[in-house]
Image (tube, rainbow, N blue to C red; front, side):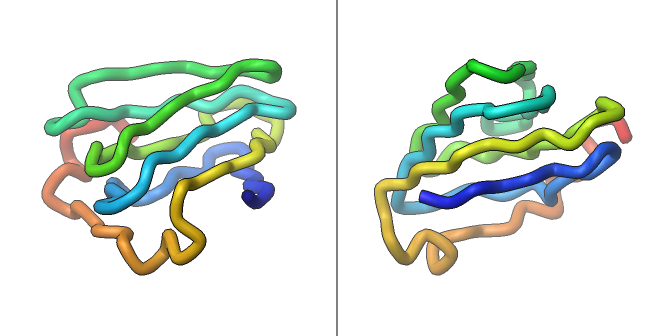
Length: 96
């Protein structure tokens, strides 16, 4: 588990985690995430909400708000960074 802060206007690169699932609990702020094989789905989560990302699912989180978004991230693999696969081919599919 770790604490993640996405600053206002912050955006991750499109990626997936090959071998583990992720659960995200938003402590404060609001975040959006595009997800799916072509980032065709979208979810907005605010403080108190839980968001789940299965293993192997591409996603791109961002913060369009004016306040930082703080979340607790729990993953099923202690070496989770080793299975991150960047997906630059998906970057142009989302606004921003």
